[in-house]
Image 1 (cartoon, rainbow, N blue to C red):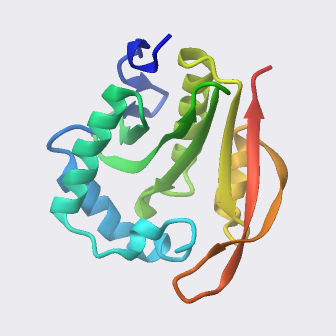
Image 2 (cartoon, rainbow, N blue to C red):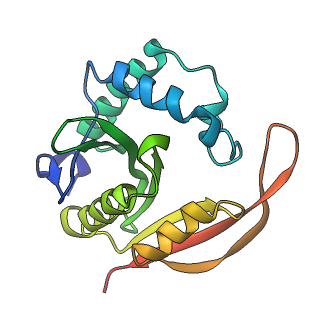
Image 3 (cartoon, rainbow, N blue to C red):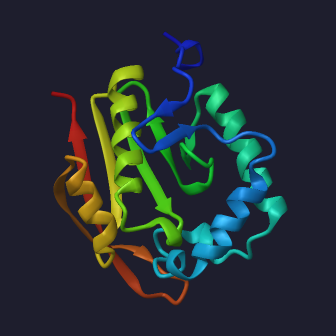
Length: 189
């Protein structure tokens, strides 16, 4: 089957969140969340190189429109994590780098600083990992976290991913500092 023919459910609803692809007009909200979280995002430049660029409403709107297009074409699966009661953006994430022949996807995410440490991002990541196994019949979902980012790798462990190993000196910061990457995965049972 061609990936573009896969029917996906509408928004994903969890206890506290609505998880949906970005769409035209979401840029302002993504920009605001990015600005509020920029200091935390820039702590890990080797993992989040996009956060080193100067944010703008136009860049955030372009992210949303390109993300919507890629989602429809089944090339990439970005999601916005929105509070069910207010619609406020608490984070972004997605299933990236699909390798359809192997049934493998890479999970990635970031949380808006004001909403971290409340289990919301874990709730969202659990939902998108489950989506990979149900809607895409994935065999494997993997995540790559900076070895010095315990919030990210502990989240992997909370959502049932297993540590496969550490890739030493696998990423480079803009300063030239080498960083280790933890590789996590969850396998279809």
